[in-house]
Each structure stands twice: as C-alpha cells, then as structure tokens.
Amino acid sequence: MTTRYGMTVPFAGPLHAQADRFRELVELGYTDAWTAEADGHDGLTPLALASTWAPELRLGTAILPAFTRGPALLAQGAAALASAAPGRFVLGLGTSSNVIVERWNGIDFEAPYARVRDVVRFLREAFTGEKVTATYETFDVHGFRLATPPPEPPPIVVAALREGMLRLAGRESDGAVVNWLSVDDARRVTAIVRDAAAGAGRPAPEVVARLFVCPSTDREAVVAQAKRLVAAYVNVPVYRAFHEWLGRTDALGEHWERWDAGDRAGSLEAMPDEVVDDLLVHGTPDECRAHVARYVAAGITTPVLSIVPLADVDPVAAVRDLAPGA
Image 1: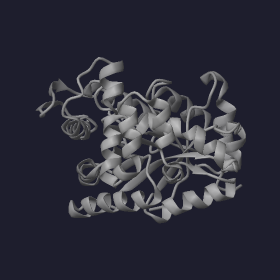
Image 2 (image 1 turned 30 degrees about the horizontal axis):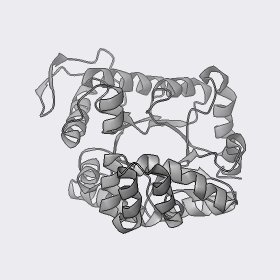
Image 3 (image 1 turned 180 degrees about the horizontal axis):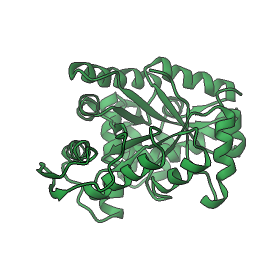
C-alpha cells in the first residue's frame, strides 16, 4: 500500500480564513487532511470546505464517534462527503470515550465494541442504496434508504486500541486508526490488524496513525509541557486500559496512583520523561521526519501529523518545516 502523509485539520482560527493554508498543504506535498472530533469543530464541516479549497487532498475523519450521531445521520453525512469528494473520502469511526459520549453528549457509553461493529455493518448496507430494515445488537433500523447513495462508497476505517477492536478493524472494515502509541507499539498493533484482514480474506488494510509532533530542540521544555497533554489522555479509561495492555503499568503506575488521589502536580512529576519520548515526536524537523519514517517502517501506512505547539513552536512554520519535501 502506498504511504500517504497527512495533516490534522482545521488549523487555529476561524474556518472561513483557512483556504490558503489548505492550498499550501498541497503545495508542500501533503496528500491527506484528517479531522478529529472532540470539543472543537465537528469532523465533517472542515472537510466539506477542503473538498473545494484543495481538491487534490484525500479527506478523512479520525474519528467520528459511533454514538453521537444516529446510524442514518452518519450514513447521510458520509454519503454527502463522498459525493463532494468522490473517491477522496475515508470515513473513520470509533467509540470515542466516555468523557465525550457520556459527560458531554449525555449518551450512555454502553457496549462500545458492539456499537462500532453494528454501525460499520449498517453503513455497508446503507451505502448500497437499498432499504435497510435490520435488528442489530445495539440498535434497530426500520425502513431507512439513502435517497442519494454515494456512487463510490467511502472506505471505512475503525479507531482501535486493544486487540478486540484491532481485529474488528481488520476483519470488517478497510483498516484502522490508531494514536498515542510508540513505534514499537505500532509494530504490535499493525500486525494484529493485518493478520485479521488476511484471515477474513480482505485486502491489505490501511493503518492511519495520528502522530503528535512538536518540532523543537528544547527537549526540557517540550517534555515538561507535554506531560499535561499526555496525562489528559492516559487517564481517560479507554486509553489507560490501552497503555496497561501495551505494558506501561510499571512506567505509569505511580502517575496513575497520584492522579487518582487528586495529586495532579505530583502525578506529572511521577510521569517518566521516557513516556513522553515514546508518545510524542519531537526534535529538529529532520529528526521528526525520521521518527515518522520509523512508524511507517513499523507498518503505519498513513501517518497524520498533529502539531503540538509547545516550547513556543509556531504551528504555521511547523507545518512547513515538517512537509514531506522540506
């Protein structure tokens, strides 16, 4: 599978003023633009704009939560993007987290594995344009038909952390989306996805990795500041379970203990610097590109950079400095 090189969008500032920055991605050699969906812009609107601003880019969601839109609305949104960017849209779906689903959206975060599986199966049916009446484990659909099915159904990739979801991604979708992992972790998870796809007789899967990157040589400042960012993720239950599964209990055990006790400052002090080095790409732009290349060698087919502007890094300059052809 051809390696692609993506950037997380949108950028800081109002959406209406970002057309030139999207165009610049093409000029710099980036092939993809991917959105996330948490507490900022939704995952689809920036891509709709990108479909006209930079029609050379492939567009993807990393990810849309499977809980926060109903199945039919998910199908409509995906079909609309696939129509706006025919052959250039990849639908990334995942569980998201209990924080986003329950605390922020008031939706029960129940049976996440089954929910994602069921949504993927429903979307496959819905994209055909046939009427869907089906009972899934986590929801029922009665008589839904896409009025304008996409002429080319978009590939679906599933956000996956531990083995069950990784195998689901390989077995029932077109690949996986992963993040907050080291190069060694990437080697482990990509092998699981590939094995599951091969076992199901599916083509070689795409594995998208959102990589958090800070091109700065001020290691001390980067590591100190990044610990807050890392802590914000590894203390979310799904990510904590992921890093326990990856074998970081010894490294993060004291951090988690202090965090659970409410000692936020102490928990950051207890986080080893090496955890940041594992999970955050930093150094000179050339060192960052070399680090990204190690992820590709470990099985990642689509690295998607997410600029982390720590240590006074200018995010606009960082996009340029990290470009494939820089």
